[in-house]
Length: 180
Image: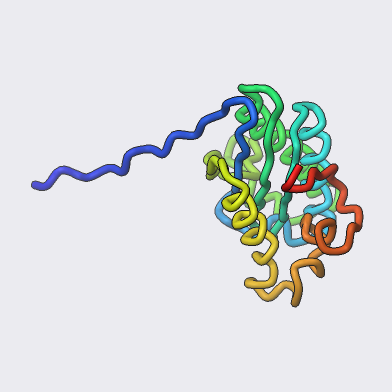
């Protein structure tokens, strides 16, 4: 019997000044963020958590079943805390919203013990060390709604930083231009 091969784990570095392209998905990859209000909740919690951890956000997109963010922290060791807190705060606010509105989505995120799990526990985190790679990731996330047929141009999607880059319009998150 052949031994199972395992991929080596990609190491994520969280040093001063490292930028990160982070992706995490809704529980079961369900479209739990389909409602505009849900996407606004996640954006609001991104902004409050970014501020609490002194993060520099270069871009984001909120999709119906996942999120992307390109972010950097001024201090080492903030990345894991930021991700955990953003997921926690947005989960609490989303469950509260679903409860208030009697949304049937709540049944998909509630386990047999009554605990809620909005997000898949794992997330993808990619270190971004060059301007070229940062631009690539930013363009990728901004094109995501276009590729999915949710809008025609990246700046048409109101739940993304593309509007800020293209039109200088407020998007609910304090952004830092990628060249700063």
